[in-house]
Image (tube, rainbow, N blue to C red; front, side, top):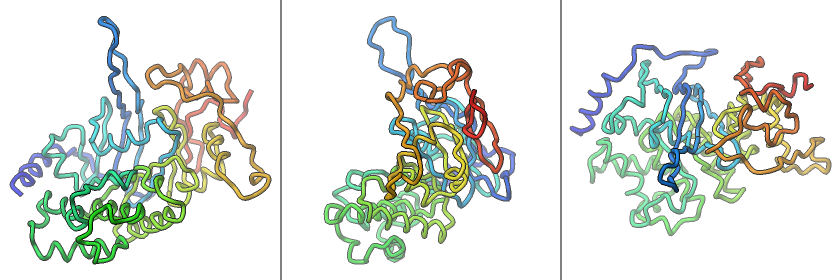
Length: 358
């Protein structure tokens, strides 16, 4: 508790004077500006120049209170890295991440370890793998209660904590008899519910769901998605929902971000993105969604040739030009700028699909 108090006092000095911004009647919870996350590549030669993996290469984004923001893209494009960078599990190489608490901005980059530890209960993570993310030597009650005692919310052995854990378990669809059982005694869906309960027990404001349903069967996926939606509405949570499955993100997300090779290439409300796709990469991703209709719902199946270019040495100009069927000389030479296409729809493309090509 003493450590928590010192961390809170120190964090108060890190608050910025700027008040919490609002856009279109929605309060901003997190603001990212030009966030870069570079990882050094191990040198193989004595005098070799240091190279870096550009996992996130200049991300600017606002995340609003109470929304679910979907983040989609191919494996290796930097989605999970961005989620962990926001949580400061990876301190960003450059850029600013502001978290708005009680109407004031906190620059996460400037916080010390103890100061950041105070905010951990506000910023939580649900892991992808429900099998490896739970300690096999701890019971369900211990797993959920660990964060409560670490943050000084309850003392170990407090009867009130057990009652609270039972309430959290009930909210997450876990029966009371599971309290003293171990992770290996549960199915994948039940284990993911335990992971969700562990994160939500601290009453967070923001939760990163990192491929939270990708390891589960389709029938179990729907149950977990419904649970996350119910908990969001009940507790006023804000989600960053990371996935490579566009059909899943369409179901749960209010807005969708499309990422390619460390950059966001398109951002729009969920319905708007599916109704009016502007970026060729998004068009290709949408065409890959399975459908039961014989003619693929009237959509052309677009196959992207080749692999994603190396994030160590990305292409000049538009990073997608090496795989884009609409590529022109300008795409190879100039980096596309972020453009507002109306109706809160943004795209980074020289020739958006609704514009002229040629």
